[in-house]
Image (cartoon, rainbow, N blue to C red; front, side):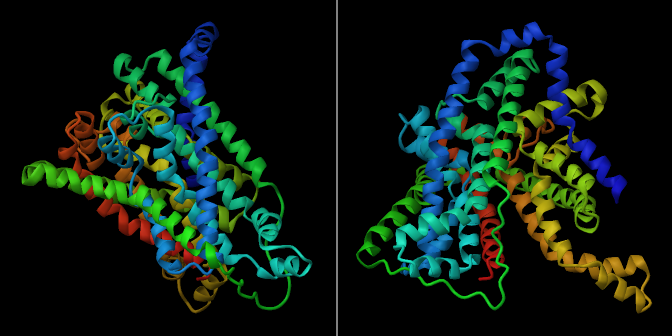
Length: 499
């Protein structure tokens, strides 16, 4: 297992090695010339402003929504819990398509902030809601008994305990902002990823595009360090004796109607507008937009790549998860960290790395399914790794040893005990990877074999031609595929919260 984990970690560092290699071979004078220029400054300003505007808005919406659902007497809170998670089933570029087709003048930073906030706030809402469900209410009750009001208890007691999910969610939102291509290209908002894509299409692996990728990787590393700093080293686990009580829900009273209206407005903007827009264009296009000769191959190729990628990713992630759980030490943590670093890189950087490596080292596999699946594995490995770690933690080695003591061989004991107990977690990880592959655009555009047409690339081709009616069936299919996976993620978060 250790050898396999080392090989996987080495393989996962290919994109980072590519960026370092391209920077070193370009020459420092050229690097400085390409990086220190007005265009890079413009892209950097756009990116910083986008992050500074979107992340706080997502935090307010995510934390506020989670608190209303988990800690107040909000009517229908169970339905709102699901409704606030629903926007995850609608990818950012589908959301952008919906708003851009409804308001053609929508463009620039304000449009990017709107689309990104509506698309990504569930990334904060879901972990915060799960954490709120696990917090020990005794601390809050003690604070209230000392004279603190509800708002003071929230800001001084509850909010500090949400630091980890807030920091993690903010990191996910920030990384999505750096890597997103389709959503921002559709509303004509320039970011590093859109600029790299333009450079790649015009010069194919030019130095300018590679240097932009280097700056993008540098920004990703800054975000990882910032998240680690914000997370801190404080402990938040309950260590006292006795059973944990249930939190008392705060009575909303006259704030019930404003809370209901706020959540309704948010849900309508995040999920209602995209669904309305897709339905509108389906009706406008009529039966002609349903082209079975194009839709069925796109659907089957999407499902094929999704299932193959999800299965392979779980298989590749297993040795790393096994080593991290059964042999935890600094070396296993270092190997695991290498996968998280690579997954933080935007799809465009991973795609460029595989383009360069495959052309220079193994030309015969360029634009083959093998390269595309390898990119999917690197991009989404942590989604499977986290779930497998959780599953393996619930399958202690003592159970294997008990099976061996009853006469089972080591292999049979491993398969019938460890793998069986890990299967539900593996299925959850595979579902998350599958969902990500269905919506992946940039790496697929760069690496897909000639003639490949997934739902995401077909949707992008139609929407880029302003054929909104023609793009609607592909958008609907992506939403329908993503919906059950999103529900699974929601259920996993509730299970983690013990609900």
